[in-house]
Image (cartoon, rainbow, N blue to C red):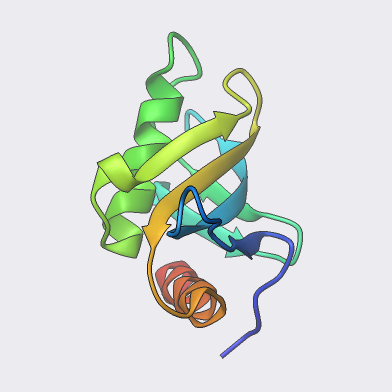
Length: 117
């Protein structure tokens, strides 16, 4: 399995917030056909994601959360868009990570790689 990269990073928790989080760097292509919607590629710099929704009034942002939720098998409430609300380059934080975060990041990378195939 590939090792985590700049596109997928684990951030350890602190005393105030003991649970860690995983940061995902995305490059989003809105307006794709419905059949192409999903993970297009996973590189060291970013996860390339195609969504059918248009980039207006937050439609593409909602679609990004929906697609990632289904690919990773996590509830949408655990995914939070933190940067790139009006950009194709987005940062998503997957919160409430328990246990070995580095191993969890590798698992996420594996799920994303499998979604590309």
